Image (cartoon, rainbow, N blue to C red; front, side):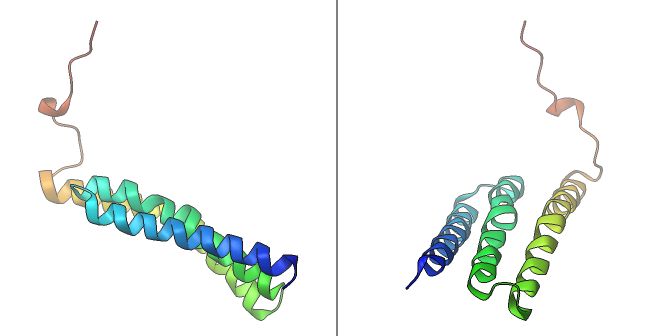
Length: 109
């Protein structure tokens, strides 16, 4: 084993670890908005780290270039999908997206 294998292994372990922690958090989260906060790191950190591990292992071959493309798509689309899901959940729960007066906390002075 050379240094590149160790680097790829470390990136893979970090990415899979973030994915596993996100899955555990998903099971423990109370409502849909908490679940959205928990799965954010999975798309922004976990999957790109796994793609980086593939890139280190495969270099810029066909598999490495596809890993870069997948990582870029996940980083670009993850926050947009999270926002759209949160907005749809809010719309389904309340019937509209605006903040209700009962949800605003009084400012502490």
